[in-house]
Length: 257
Image (cartoon, rainbow, N blue to C red; front, side, top):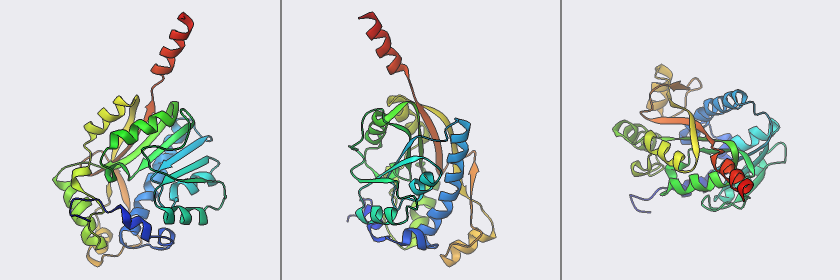
């Protein structure tokens, strides 16, 4: 692996650590996942969505899919890491999640077949995020929701999400600065894919004594938490809704023919 190549192979090594490891990069991801899941359910309630089909692209060990399945959703998870998918299935208490080993650029699901899609901590791991969003839009139903979470591209995010993560985890190239996406770039990608931005907000660790203890000891303190912020300077999250303009255009065309 060269210095400018993303280290996606690390996910093949996690196995049961997805659920048992509370320290290192997985411990941080778990704490961040807590607030992201909370925000997702809040947005789903706001949009009056309590059932339906959901797809997590780059699902890893299945944290989100398995939680959604327990809450009544028909969940699908896509990842290229076979070992992660095996772990996800192992910890699926409902035994209902359909896990698919597939490249995210060409997912074996039908057009307009999924109500909600999640692309969490994934877009910054691929060279062409626009193609992932195009594929997601293909699968998403009209007026369906697409949730995302990624990193801004600036000096602060390089310090926090590249150098900070490397120092804390001892693993290089978990993130690459060149793959980070500025919020205005992501909004443009979403628009190109007929996805209208609804909400976008920042996420960052709470800066307190517990956070410094975690950083110094390289162990996640029990009280280490993330918080929502107006600033999009480092990590940011949000969701978009698929436009029904194309559907309406097709109906008008059909009625005039």
